[in-house]
Length: 463
Image: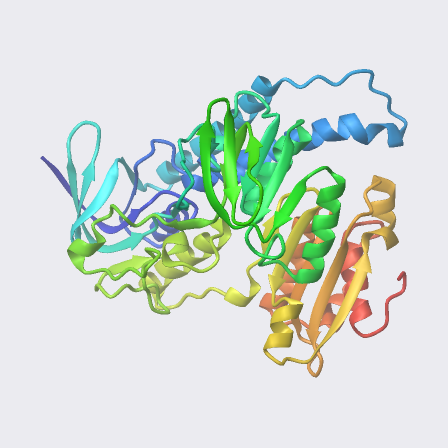
């Protein structure tokens, strides 16, 4: 029986876990990081953010070749899809990045263990490795086990014909008809991939609109543009069952005719991956969805045990988990650390991209906060015109009295990059005037942000 001791053990090697481990090592701790997969990086790097973005980029280039190059005076006689090569490229991107994470952990002298970790006591874990169990003692433990796809009653998930986001990363062939259950960002991203590659995609959403968490105005623009690309949407669709019948998948919704497809993609959110870590053995309290309850310092109800990332609820974003990991270990080491939750951006990597930070217009109205709004369309921007992609807009919401930026919502080419300066501005409490006074290079897409900031106070030049 092997037994070891460390100052800190991080349970989970995803964006929250490995970042926390590296930062703790930088601060002088003896750190271990446990993950059940030999490729560290978690869901995000292995079967989430990174592989999906690789496929989004490849499918975007394929669709551009088919439909957009002619506008630039480029004629392509034939564009042939090599799906196997596209998937191999995706796998290569993942392999390189996960290998890089292991290198970073080694470079920072973080001890890594491959196996499933489980609490025996608050300061003692057992790791079920392939060889033999390993027991680890630690002064502190950070739980960073992430999340997993949520299942749905009535949906006969088989991991193949009826699968989840992981399944949809590796279809061996383009399905002729694909039904996506769930109109959130994961469903729309992966639905977009297969639509571009030739699939007839139908998105079923139980709410009355797609992208329910997105600013309503931006969501309406997004739906219109996605429909122009060929995606079909059925809102108010309460799925009761999805099963494989012979050569087809059959999806039944309440008060609607059945829908048939070749494959079904279940994308109804994610739930904390806390079921097998031994939480009950040490008295960690979970809510009804399995999320760990923590205080403002990421402390669970068990002394010495902390939790971060998807497994504590809130926005399930890789960068949020990383920020929480850093803040947690800095609090342990120095007593100080923080996460600015009002300035965490979120991005939907469709075409066009959708990016958001802070309050939506609907939230401000519900909370009775008076605000001013500034909007700049992509069509007013010289760089967007020269790139040939003018669909979209940037909207900035600012406090009516103080002019402090309360939210920014964008849809358009590279919206995810444009939101970064807005995150900086909001983190430091900037006003729309502050953002407008910053000189933005010309011609760049970033000028759309500047014009939207000018528009808040009726000073826009180009709109």
